[in-house]
Length: 157
Image (cartoon, rainbow, N blue to C red; front, top):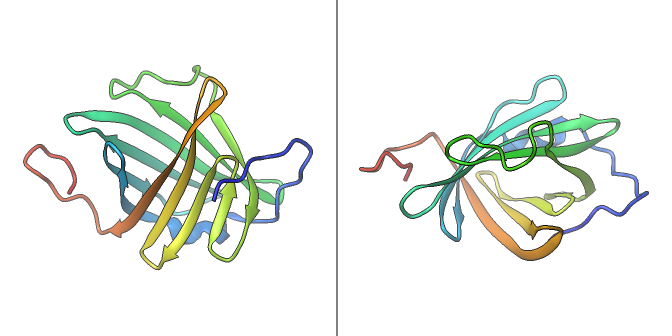
């Protein structure tokens, strides 16, 4: 389910409206704990989102991302932060994942696939890399939620 960008390969045609289904509040299951993904409505060719990933006893990381129209296609730009808001990437840097392919249910960005599995569910397939080396593919199923509910520690359920 992972596809990688090949140098010189042209991205397929797509607009931000093609991904409007992903707008909303989502809860997913990562190996170390739950993850919240909130995606705002598309405006001016961009669909921004925020991720909060939780570990068993603490916050794991935050991520700010945006699906953006570039030319006649899409790209996914992301930036990661520690719970203290220290950036993982350099201050002016971000990860850019151009759209590699698409079909009736999936958008294949460089190393990250968003596959719609139902009207209120999708799965992310994410190629985890470290220092240029491919480590593993994370499979993260998400389900739509109406918003966070509180557990005793304040974490969403």
